Image (cartoon, rainbow, N blue to C red; front, side):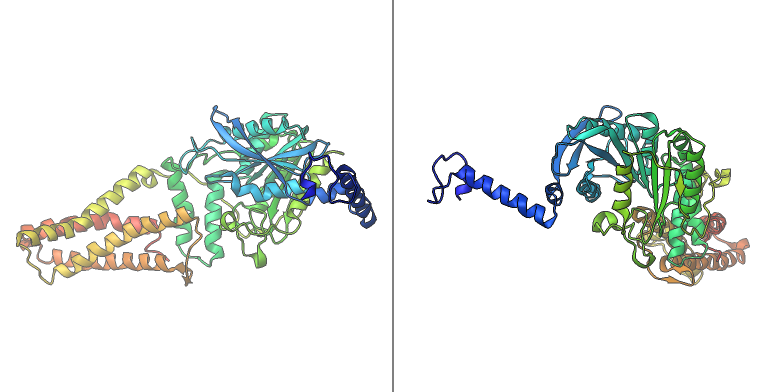
Length: 491
């Protein structure tokens, strides 16, 4: 308790030793002990808690963004700094606090910030705007007293691997660029490859792969629901003057790693960069986290905050520290295995376009829904007459509605969850996909029976039969090619 009384001039503890002298004595003992065991004071301080400071800055369009500067315990020297740029998603700063603290404990000041909410969503975003946001954060970090303004760079993961190089290509205030899990192919092409890759890794090998991974992405692009779909990352890489470190996990499943490494090497080699290093991290996933036995934790790392892969932080911090001596020589490690090459996405034909697809679906739904609607109205009026001919029509209407609505619901669920939950796979198919294919087959069989029922008494068909069965059969003529196109009637 006596040590807390810093303003008291009297001796402490009745020993006759002035309080200041006692404190100095303890400090000298600590210094001697530290020197005896060989632990530098600076290292002992750095092993402690990091220091944080909340800051605000202006984004590219003047929007105020908030962030946090994460530093090692303050020293009398200026340290290198790095701004962390988010991957895709809403992007609160806490998602990258673990990385920021790891940088800080290694002696590199890190800044994390909340990604903008205005102008960024699933269907709206601008990499140019995000790049300007990153440069606003760089400006804040360079003005910190304990940061060397000539040693501040950008770190970007996943989508940040497009944003960080674009920002660095615009400003000489960025001293280096670190990219983790970056894709060198356009976003739509990367997304189609990633979706197909996830399905294949789960054991899916049926028509679902092409229908969902390729045709769904192409439809989203055509409908204007895939922002920055055709962004060209190569142009920014060729304009970079700064040193570049790019890292891919051995178990990368989001960005095509072998293709990306090859394109990076070519683009940076013919560009303006002073040097680059391309590395592959063993037992790592898309975001640099440990992926035991090749099981990537990419879909869970945001919430579970797993362990970094061995050597991940060290490889980045050592590379940044060595920049103080000289830029790196151009080097690239052997790319990880990539079983399937990504394919550029072609524009949709007229019959595949979003307006045509929407029109076809509306026709199908209207026709199939008309039968139960008419039945309800007739039952309400008391004029409903049930005959054996109604049974196949019921199956047609029910199976058709289940197939169309179920397909939209299932693909929508997969899109929102990023294929994180697929469930059991049987014969190369997920259980929901098997269910949808069976439902489509039932609808076709029921349509044949219903058509036969309608055809035989066509000369004597009454008005009721024409009203009830006509829309069903018209919908079927649109349903069959639609179901073939989406792989519901093919293996």
